[in-house]
Image 1: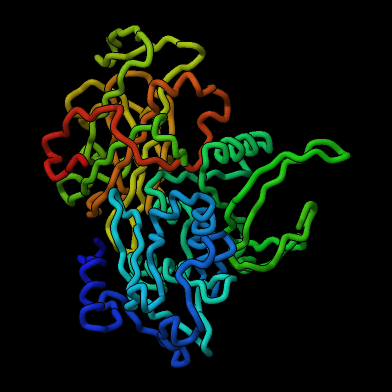
Image 2 (image 1 turned 90 degrees about the vertical axis):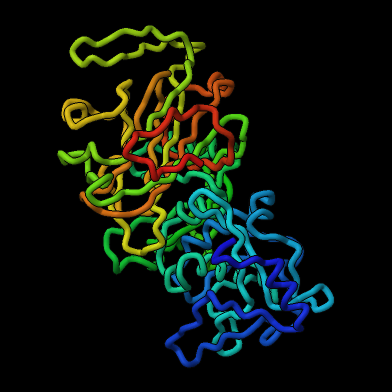
Length: 466
């Protein structure tokens, strides 16, 4: 439950009293006197929750700059199983069906699915919806989902600008990765998108701009700069000039069509991935050591990760470091085990820290300042980023590893969640290690643990393994 509100209890109470539900946990503050909060029956004849099934065309952006959120919702409609988990269908505006002004949705919030309750008071202006609407007259599921998402974020104003990966995660419980397409060849991007589509991935994209003044400008081909799109298809077609690679995009605006040539993601296979969650906190003077270049870095929380053998490793000791190292043998052309690691800031504040996450290999019971002075991580998330989450993907051999989450500056206090996806052994033979095998893509999964965690460092007693 979100905010301690039980949908079933609240609905039963409203039906018993013959009242329409008003949500005391939602802020209705609005500086525009022309904006009126109305329920759908007050401005629409015969409103419906879902009319003839949910489709991507049910999401049309209004006067709120949340195209990033709506692009994610559009992608969600392509996967009915995921959509039905987020949007329970047994809801209605029909009085005989028990309508009493209360609706609910399921969202993933930092390690768990929560039931979010909302009333159906919606911002209108001149008798029309101010924000998201459907192209089917009277259909309300998308605008109510937008309100539920606004509620968990702190209000509609919190949706003004955001990141597509965050919304994809909150609708799936998976890990979202971002790819800068300018750093990849056309062939690499196509293979990535095609593979992700085959894995039933939810995908979104946007056109980056160098000047803020270009945001919202429509180019000659009808594409909106600085705007988010959902990726809803990828096809190879044969033309007279040869093979052509096409992406099918949808603009959350519901209009402004592409006018160029040919005009008019998440791995859901739970048999291939396993996941575990760890929650913890950075505490000033105790476990908030700051970035990797600081002497106090070793004070950050440390988690030990054991990776089972993939093949028979040759084990030996490096006399210079006193560290055990492993040399894995190739098995059927597959070398190493793929892991995906995400660090998320879970504090509800809007003022986020710059964060990073690092993966080291070591058998030591605890890594001290000297170890970090002379050792480099196996992999990390790069420079600290001012975002809700950061992600790394890498191939690892069997052995003992240590995960270190950090903020850029020392003594910054906050809570975090770490999620680690491990590739299951049976799926490794299916994976071909090519240049694109470790390219970023969106992966969604809700899985059981395959790798295991071997305890926590003594000074991290407040960290709980979920």
